[in-house]
Image 1 (cartoon, rainbow, N blue to C red):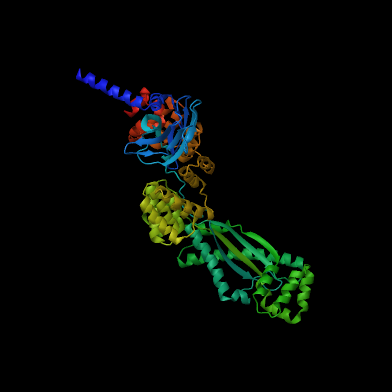
Image 2 (image 1 turned 135 degrees about the vertical axis):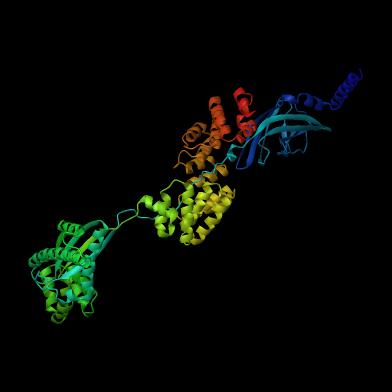
Length: 598
């Protein structure tokens, strides 16, 4: 009985209060007839901001003429609340008011927009509309839930920026080492005369000896000789056709000399090693010589050699000779004009022309090179036996990042001025998620090679992963100036800034990338985003989770459940995330969803 009396007393007091308030009492009673529409229906954060617009409709005959109402949206979340902009509404009878006027007979509409900073904890929040009316007295009209919030998918940025590893400059093509020697001929003849001054010259004799000794050593070592060549010339004097024939004869004579000298080299080797002609090694060497087919080339008159020799000579009037050669296209006339310079010609005849009467022997040897297997083995066991480019090349031969890391560390120790080794170590560390250590190696690389687009790009990624987006942008812009493609990475920054269409545009050259899918989703294209996620080769928990979000936005429960299940299997922490994620608000009562997140 006492409890009943208390309730009755309370009710009578409320009725008495409302009655005493006159028109305010009706406003309190009829407050549920005021309708609210919130955009977006579920609050979202973009660029770390939460934007909301609330539109209200006040029915006719609701608003007292001399009343005014303070309407304040409040975002409430675990750990705090944030009051948004307060809107003042006033009746048509309020004088000197600053609020939005609402006609009593017709009712009215109002709108209020605001932007607040997103804070941790707002992932699970409610937007409440709190209103109080004043007409002599002030009464609370009540509180109404306006929207849920806050969707934070825009903050699920993945670490898939384009990191750049510096390339090797190793040339894997066939390398040729050339050995050359000359045989000189008398004027107008193709006979051999080893007493000619040029043939007796010590340097020339040593070159001939070295040529044939090289042949012998190369043959014994089993190295490949790509080809032999014998080119012969005549000095530019006399009849042109005669000199053409003369150079051809000199090439043939040179070929015979070439073969004879090779045989002599083998015989000397046999004698020194006390081996007979029938010895298998000597016989094999002689057989190889018999199979040689040198490329003979008759070059005719050597005007090019003549010009070079004159240019490098001490002849006083050499510029006149050069002008004659350049200006006079008729070879006979050119030669005659030079002969007319009697004093100069004698100097040419003695100091220039004899060196042009020659046959040149050339032997092109294919340089031995290490196999890929040898290169990789040496890089990991004896790195000091390889040169810089061989080490970088060896690192490219393996897909094992731990092996790559060891090779690059050896490279940085052996070649401490090579920025690429430090950059590549940082690259591998970033792939491991070791940001701080990677940053120190990149700083070293940047010191060794300033304004380097590759290093600047990677420094930008480090800054982005540290959420230092301002410096990340500066690094990317500097890298771009250094001709490095940073479009994808700039696209990731566009996601951070909430410019999703620009992000998609910047990333358009890529495919099957997580952040591209995120940008597509946030720009309103969940179907394309899902296709992008599906084609990613190695999917992690975050990839499956985002695809579950795509399923929710497409209202495809099967897609949602399938991907969310895989996400949780890879990382159980996504279970609790999904349970509160307002992306899945419409599926909170779905039995399969509840079964996954419980």
